[in-house]
Image (cartoon, rainbow over all chains, first blue to last red; front, side):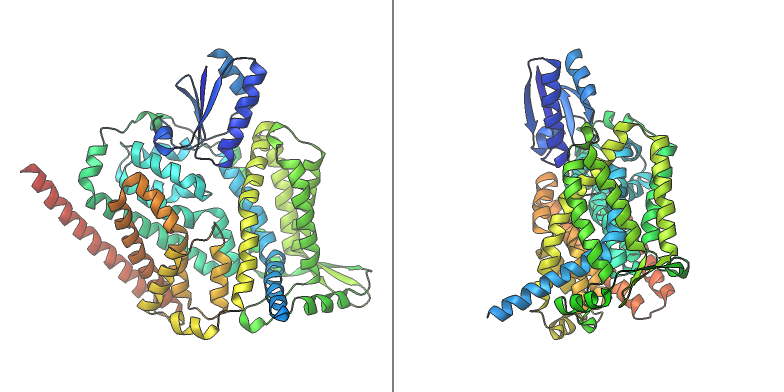
Length: 78
Length: 484
């Protein structure tokens, strides 16, 4: 599974990466997590504000920090 | 030599202590909570849906200008949003309006500017930057009309289809937080009068005050402030809040712990203690319970009730997390900045400032703008710097010109902007900002000097009318050209 965290390195984006790593561990799935920091890479997805979370090329949420349980559910559902 | 360094350190620390004690608490502490609430609780779609391609200009420009209040509480969110509005949304014009107004309109800058420099400057900064931001946006959209049309095909409307309403609870909550901010900072009789008095039998506070005055000597004529006994107490409390918040709020999104409650209790106590008036004496410390204190207590009780009633646990945790994140990000830089300002102040002679920007001239306003462009200060540090200039005799007109230009333009942000919209557009933008900031300073300066507000309004309206006509003419000519 490919997970992308979109964000230019703001504290919220870093926190999202942390939470995502924890969520993946909790869900017990294999996932490759990358943090996309360049503007072109971020703008390739339909988002207006960072942070964004992309799981298998599908944008799950943007502009907010989702709960860990939410991410676990997305990861399991994918 | 050792003496010089000592006096520099003393000046820096004195400035810092005076700032922490006087301005920061009652304005910045609640302002950080408002900023946190705006970021965590207001869904961004509530504003961004007005910024789509299909939104009419009458809506998208003002929405972009004022959306900064909700969306861009700190400069790190401005760039992604700017790119988003430009590439996927309403286009170059509204994106530029957003970029220009955002830094001026955010709640932290607003509260801090108002308390440290005067509400008149804060209000002038909002109004003038909103009007001019929209103006610059329109100009840029006309100048680069063709490129923008080419962009149209790339834009996706899907992002903006999502609509979201701001729940009633969020309005109530924000209202109460802003009430707390206003209660703490507004200087009116009702709030500053005291209605009861306590005598705390702590002896020798007058000697403590005398010692503080020796430790932090100040010269009121140069716009310096000393530290009071109350200020010293508040500084200690601030330090305690810092420590407890570090343990209690760093990972508050995972749940509360004991430190969280300690931090929150300390914050409440600090706000209350900052709102009373303390008069040191030989036998006892007199504490006057001001209207301000009652208002602060009421507002905090309201915030507590609203928080319990309208939000679930996670939303409140997110709110606290965002608030603490702002503090962590901005406060250390602010402390360093204020200290540095205290040190630098020793070197700057008032005569220089008087000569350069002591009166409201075109040159003085230009100097203010240029200083703003070539000096980069982190968020909010522009305020103590402006305060220093004010103390050294700068006219309020050029001061506003500086305040308009500094957060909007810095070499760093120009380079990032150029990366998003291209070098030509970025430098055209810079030129317009420099021009309009100078103009803003001149207009405001004229008002301060006593020119009739009607005359200034007339000048403003006439200027906008000429600009609009010129733009329409250019637009019509271009349309004709592309038709043939």
